[in-house]
Length: 113
Length: 115
Image (cartoon, rainbow over all chains, first blue to last red):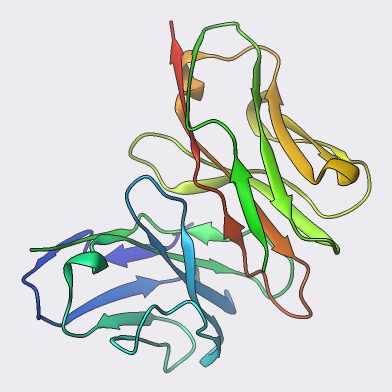
């Protein structure tokens, strides 16, 4: 079956531009996670959705980062006024509710120039 | 806050050599533990997990890991590696929450297997 998909796969933005990154989770998965993976590091938690409710946004690095999942399916991570330090791979993962395996998408590699 | 340490950043082995990748976590309570793998050009995928029960956990492709609570460790092992095991391996921990799997990852270990 279809896995988690993310788009775009690559994004180059000039400093100060806004970007929007999309995640299509596995159909029926209640839980959705966003992670940021800097070069040479492991994924770092950004935010968590249970259906359309954003239950944890403790990992968002600044108020320039905003995520939504309005209908409990597709999610968008938006970064306003991008900075060079935002350059990273942004990973989306989904899972069933509870202690289940997270399924990861391919990620979006964001480069801010 | 929970944290995860992976001791080796880059490991190079010859085929048929044995593998052990170290992982230590810092959290005193109940934990769920994971090893994820990322093959070149592919997504992160689960290799194995420990929630409870037998501390020796077997995963896919002949990998296993042992949870030693007294040492806060969850080391990954494989008796004989293959070239196809070349990948980056991430240890991860979830301090068992009331609700969801907020997972903290280590920095990863890149394994290169030489034919």
